[in-house]
Length: 283
Image (cartoon, rainbow, N blue to C red; front, side):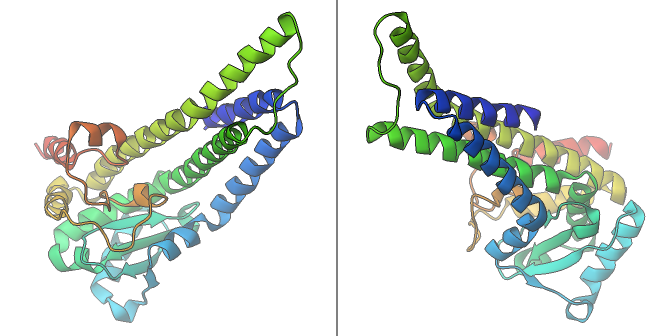
C-alpha cells in the first residue's frame, strides 16, 4: 500500500515538473484521497451493483443462510448480507470494508452444481477474505491502480496534443529539463503496467491464503477442492462482468483457459495449482 502511494506521489511530482505546474502534484494527491475514501465507504455497493446482485432474505434460501450462519459462528465473524446473481456461471465473491459491513454474493449456477460440502468450502473461502480484510485491501488497491492509470493517461494525452511542458532554456538547465521530460514519458508508460502487475500479484496471493484459511475453517479441504474442480470445468464467462470487480470472484469470471500468460496476467492463480495445494492439506 505504501509503495502504491509512493508511485502516485512520484508520478505527480514528475508530471508537475514536466508541466511546470505544482498544482498537478496536489491534484494527484487529492484525487487519490477522494477515490480512496469513495472505495472505502461505497466500494462494496458499487461492486454489487456492477455485478447485478440482488439481496436475499432467509425465506428465499434457508439452506444457504444456515451454511453461512454456521460458518460465521465458527469463524467468529458477524453475519454478512447475502446476495444472489442470476448467472449460470458458478462463481461467488465477498466485499465490504470490514467484517461488520461485509456482503457475500453467489451465482445461481454455483448453487445448482455444488453439493453441501462443496458449497461450504466456497462460503468458507469467501468468509476468509472477509476475516483477513482482503476485501478492504483489494478495493483500495484497485482505486490506486486507477489513479496511477488516470494520471499517466492524462500526461500522455497532453504531450500528444502538445499541451504543457517547460520552456526550453539553453545550456545545462535545458538538458536537465529534456532528461526529466523523457523520464516522465517513460514513467507514464511503465507505471500503469507496474501497478497492474502488483495488483494481480496481490490478488493471486490472497486467493491462496483464502483457500487455506477456508479449508482450516471447514476442516475439510476436499470440499473446496471439489468445488474448484467443478468451477474450473465451466469455461464460459459470466454475462455481467467488469474488469474492475473480476479480482473479487473465487474464480476468473471471464472464463479464461489456464496458460503460462494467465498465471502472470490473471487476477487468479491457476485452479489446478489451488487444488493441488488443498490436496496437500488433506494428506
